[in-house]
Image 1: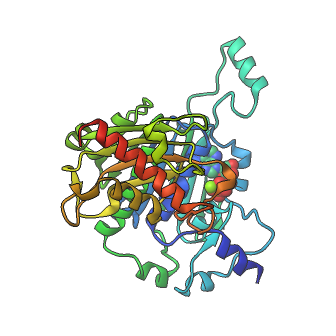
Image 2 (image 1 turned 60 degrees about the vertical axis):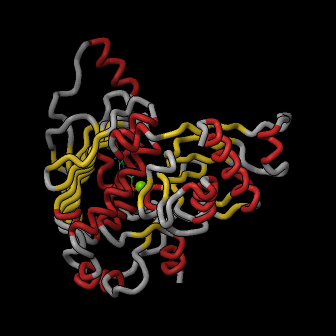
Length: 359
Ligand code: ADP
Ligand code: MG
């Protein structure tokens, strides 16, 4: 029963994109300035995520792939039953290692884990040898030995043959093109949400996009969606102050929990036929729930052609007590204290931004 509870509350590995999500989150957690994602055959054959974050000391590699929680994960047969989801919390690498051939290769930043050693190295001018690093492989849950490996500072995680030992799960995978679409969507969201990190994506050896990581959202949009979209983007930035008056504030509900709305939305002529390009973030978490997406679309009034949707990269900030971003295990959904006030606020802020552009 505890296993079931943990799975219901945890994350999900159902396809290559879910693996990519976990690995990119780990890279961000490690303070990476640069994250390179490379996948083969939509990620079904191989996923590689390389970062320049703090790294993992060789002695800690076994911990990184170990099961942390006290309750045990289900047997491999249960994982393979095809029902429900494969869940975990704080156990991404453990879970991925159970259903693939996983290699974690890492070299710690000299200063990250041992400040004394780093200082000494600095004073004496002696650094770690350029190939200092180690790797550990897990194959279908079988953990190998830590071995020395030459690699740059940071961590590279490779996931080969996802679901090789869980055929029922493997059967649920769609075509490589569809799986890559999902991977692309995930990496795109993280690239847009973290314009200060250089994020790149490669499929079958060809670069899909690469952001510069210069902190500029417009430049991230340019890298991800191209020049035409980037050129059509309109800046939205509005902080809701308590003491503010005036016509703009008057249209925003007095009791709104929203503190700030900012980002970019496209000119009504730059649209797509689906809502995928409406990237909305609540307190920096990507959400797909309809509240914000509808608010964006509504702001355009009748200006969008039928069944067309604008581009948006929109960040909404609310105080922690007024929003729950954990209501769904994949955290794409959110629950607001005052959903109507949130929706109205976001719509009004975008309406005003469009009006300022004469739209
Ligand atoms: P969680 O991220 O919830 O701790 P994971 O299974 O995703 O669980 O990762 C386990 C641990 O391995 C992390 O807590 C971290 O210490 C280490 N780790 C994983 N990926 C990286 C990475 N890219 N850089 C540095 N450390 C990492
Ligand atoms: Mg993690």
